[in-house]
Amino acid sequence: MQWYERLYVGEQARKKRYATIQAVRKARHTGYYVLTPAANGQDLFDLIPAAAFSQEYYRQKDILVVGIAADFADAAALSGRIVEEMYQKTGGFDVQEFLKREKE
Image (cartoon, rainbow, N blue to C red; front, side, top):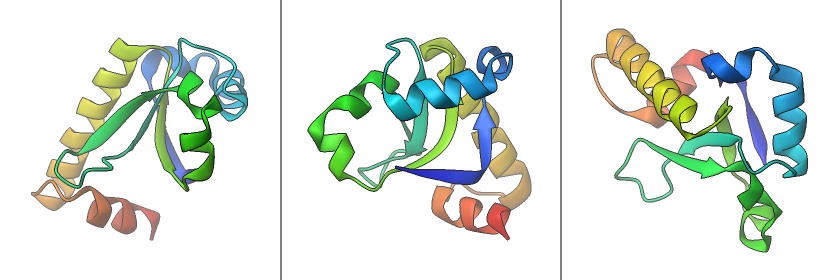
């Protein structure tokens, strides 16, 4: 698991940012969600429950965590916020390009 340098944090998760990050790293809390670039290349993001990272499939993958959220609703709102920012800055919906530009 890789963490995006400019990690996005949901409004509810912001209150307990450090605890949320630790819970996601240890895959010990079922309520938290992470946002990653979509694995299928067609969607923009995948919203994955943090508990899924305890599964072998996710432990073997080198997944970029772009954002963290307190629950699914917080994750959905966060993905909307990122998409809005991406469109305002780039005029498009190319997640990979947006993340590269933001990193620089």
